[in-house]
Image 1 (cartoon, helix red, strand yellow):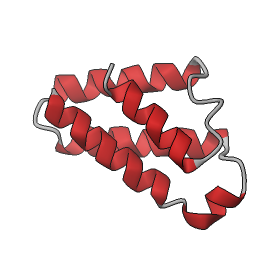
Image 2 (image 1 turned 45 degrees about the vertical axis):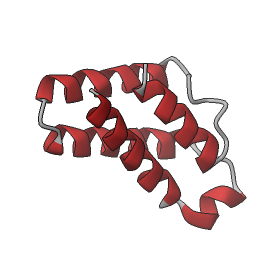
Image 3 (image 1 turned 30 degrees about the horizontal axis):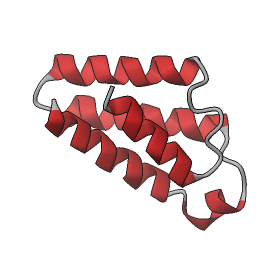
Length: 89
């Protein structure tokens, strides 16, 4: 499970940092957050050795997105930190 968390952290940081300076200049959109989580889930489901853990982690993060857990995250840093915490739960 720790390896899964490490991969999710790496993927989330990579995707969020890919937003670059443009995302830092303006508030992160809900669309950006959903697309980032969708892409993280896709990568983990395609590459993680335990499909059931990958699937359940993806479902957990998507549920948190729908519940508004990431609504207060207005910068890539805050969003990445929240994703990291979410994956570690």
